[in-house]
Length: 98
Image 1 (cartoon, rainbow, N blue to C red):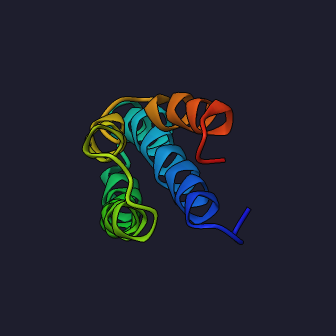
Image 2: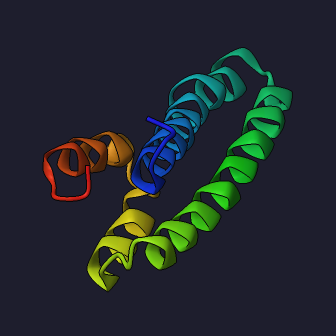
């Protein structure tokens, strides 16, 4: 998976997507229902770090393989949608880039 630029992107997308899911479905409920706001601070910081790495990876892949503008924009937009990176990963596996 890590041998190609798309493989690196897919891995980073899965990490970023999972960090968003942990933030939304584990850390946020713990903040509001268990009174543990520190968890959101920790998980939110990690998610922010992974998001920055994800954007850098999008830029790398776009220039390395001459990814189309629509693929790059789609990759950026799905980062804001829960489970979006999993859907994009499935599309990438079926695409010409895999």
